[in-house]
Length: 201
Ligand SMILES: [Zn+2]
Image (cartoon, rainbow, N blue to C red):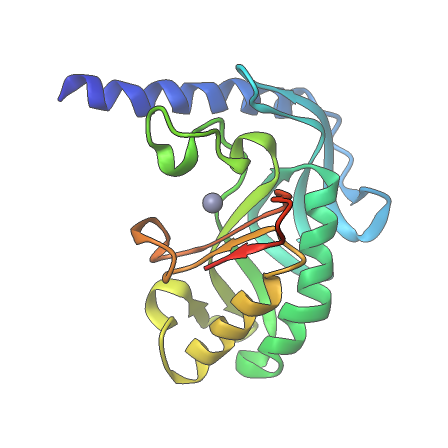
């Protein structure tokens, strides 16, 4: 059993190496990726073990006026994709519910790890700075549209279903509660290109 505990610790350690770089970055908050709508900090190349890491990474704080609950590290292609989806899909789909979309609750972003943290599995898109996990959409009135609480029914469930659907295409991979047991409480979005079109479940 002890070995099973050590493996995730090793994988976590890898992401901490990448995280240390952020502290040395020049803290110029503002527009990144050449787009005023994307607010964050350019942090340069994030080194990682093996194939992990991000070239010309940014830590995104907000897109199109919607804040992120914590700075999310990603590449500019992923940041632009997130911005476009928030602007053209998420904001209109949430509409006036709860006063409108205010914050994306970020469950995970860059991390040097395998898919679903399984030893021996392929490297996750999270390890390349191409993925973000969102557990809830916080609204202006302080309430939430939560993947765990609202998926599967009701007005907020229907909004979640539309958010999941609209992300499919802009993002190459979209996973939600109907994909597997690892995604009961969040949406996984990444900009992987599969060749056969987007993979959405
Ligand atoms: Zn994910």
